[in-house]
Image: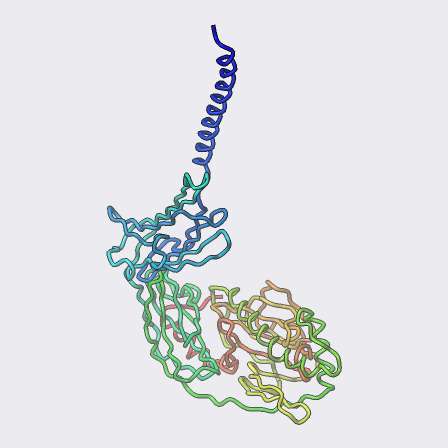
Length: 471
């Protein structure tokens, strides 16, 4: 027979046992739940498809609270595995804290960093872990990316000859770049001009044949290096010096006197069209607002023009020289170095990148050649402005219009009316500001108006390469 003490102890032991069982079950459940927790989020940003001589590995890893147990990257090829990065030795790469929870890892992964790499298939493996369940377990994730190792550099060489370029002017080259998927073109100093498939000018037969227009800008030195380049998706690049001759051209200097009457006309009108500039139109602030227009807004408009180059066609849309505004007097030439005078003092200097052509007020402005309208709207210092794309990075600009008669996307023929001349934007009087653009860079229009230049510098090379020119 149980004693009173034994009977009292039994419920206590039972309760204790239940508590222990529940604790074990709870711990086991929590342990299993922790094992199902997701590991860090991994994103391999680069490389996407290829590894070359100098490829960079760019990886981001994100974990709640920014806690990581480990981050390891290896490169596998065949039966070999090459350690690329480990969080235990971050000096092997560049580690940057992007956010409170995300780190960014950058590490060279090309042939120069991993000499044992061979051309062919490879795999990037990124494995990352984070602590869970008070650090008693880890949640791990793994991401792999299959890539191709390319070690052979591309090849590039000119096919055309007699490359003569005027300072501030443009030129044209026919060249060959292999393999077929390379990015190629012409590099003039630090500026790049993309190449286009030669089928765009009627040259067929060899898919490796490319064509490109390029410029030697007025602010570049006459001896600026001009090279062809080809770069494959793995980052391997080849260059070849382009045989050419550059000729000096004088650029005029002029003094532009501005007065309060001019400022009172142009500054409020431009301020109304560019409210984000917050230009003051108070009488005492007009000169300062003019300087912001002539500087900051000019540069911003230049960037807009440069961005429009991306809308170019890969086909040559014209077959002959461009036409100038008929019976016009030239009020200003290309690359005139202007000094602005206000109240008998110099207040600014800028370069005029076009021709100012005047006939009579509101004269019809005609398309200089066949093309597609890529811009037909107000554009800061240029006022009402139309930009036509003629293909292969070549575009023409028509500014200060009083009215615009075309819409973006419209196809126009040489001689079609685009609008009428005017005084919108930063214009002193009714005229057309006209310029030619190559990949968004202003070049001297005089050449493009010249049938002999068009024949010698462009059409001859196309014909000699077996092309017909297309439209």
